[in-house]
Length: 286
Image 1 (cartoon, rainbow, N blue to C red):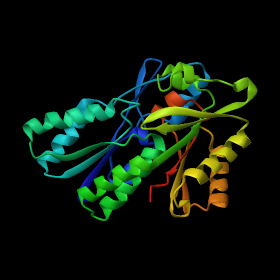
Image 2 (image 1 turned 180 degrees about the vertical axis):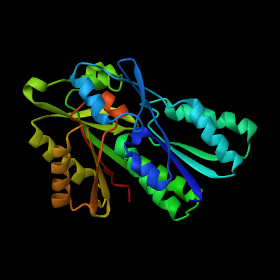
Image 3 (image 1 turned 90 degrees about the horizontal axis):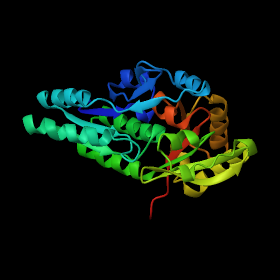
């Protein structure tokens, strides 16, 4: 590939994706019981979900600046072009770390040719953007073309998701405690989305079947030519619901395809088990 594509593990793509496509991964760190793990590389998502079920609250931290410096320096020395597709700056400081590190490397290598892009996306919403960037890079499309596409897809990527317990997001500071309505005893399912990179609760729905039905309705309202899209679904140790959702999307919305992946250890540390998330492109103004 003429352009090196880089991302972080918040995009929830599996390890073999990076290995098969030559994509550079910056893993976020996950901390459980005093141990530090590298998301995707040295920890499985189920370890996080089992820890949460046992009453342990994992913590996360960014990829190290040293990792960015090493990769960016190698890019500069090899005179290669690169694009780093980053997790939302509203949910993590990793974009800012990468941007500042690139500026530092430019002091020694003024010709460093790297774009650092804040997608304002998370999980497979970010992952779908990465997948398209990799596809374009394999076709030897220019860095400028890929950057333009990444920015467009990031801007129009819808995130719809539901968590079993909003307390996990509130404890991690991902939603305000005032927004963390919890209705487990009443079988209340919160439906959330991402607006400008932030997590926003939008509805409370009673029961799983009504939740899935409402997701289909919102996709129909917001989606743009779903029959031409690959829709993403990520789940937190709930493949059964993800598969049910996939069948509904294919049957009722006639999506081109549906790609399912597990929510990784870093994102899953904040959402908790039982989360289901759907990603697709919204309608653009004509």
